[in-house]
Length: 81
Image (cartoon, rainbow, N blue to C red; front, side):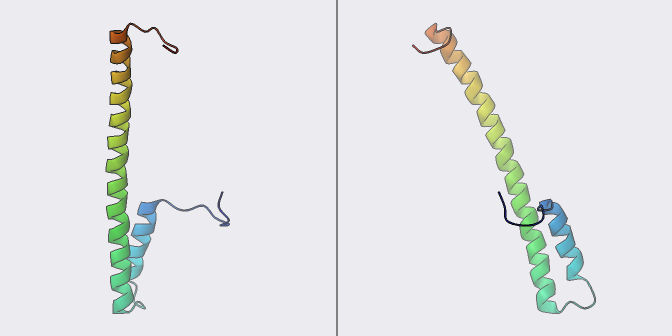
């Protein structure tokens, strides 16, 4: 449970807002660079998260399949041995 009075927005939305803010007229060069780097970092982390989630789902499916094979090969019908 969070003590924040708001829900976090989607990561890519935050990245887009940072990228847009970087080019507002009142933003100095250092802040512009920081906002652009923040947007790029968020996007890179989001891509990595999606790759890891996909890999995890594939591993879980493989584990279930292997568990089924082991169960068939061991002749066990379920439950404890």
